[in-house]
Length: 175
Image (cartoon, rainbow, N blue to C red; front, side):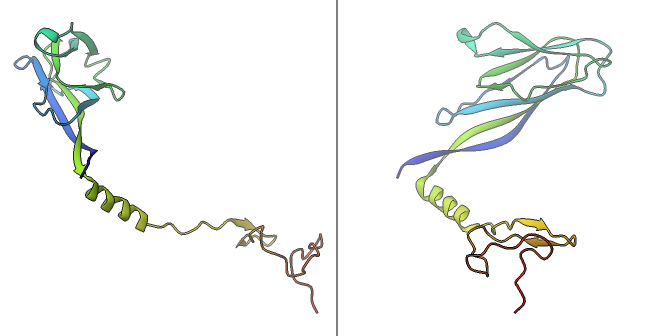
């Protein structure tokens, strides 16, 4: 039985302040791939009129790289920032380099969870069971009423003769 991965998403967040200048996102799980998709950073309602600089440090220990500032927030000019295109792999650390905060970091933790082929087959069967009804093309006729348009493949009731142009077009001839 082979294993396949499917994404599992959970909300992750932290608060950076004078008392908690640094917060890390890391996982001990080596069997799954993990990703932290940043969404927003914003100042709390008690933030002072000062610049708050948040920096990002990736890696840990000897592999730790230099910190990179990713947001500068200010109550009057920029109290929030959207970071929806920034996806990170753990371990990552957020640090309040300057200011007293509070700064709230909102992100989405995405992990690839393994499940068996049997579970995957069940999901595929459920998707196949859901059928959508065909969409009918609708056109307006002269009286302003809507009616379904005939398919192009259908033959006209007159046999080989095309319908006459003008008033009453497309109607059967009276016998």
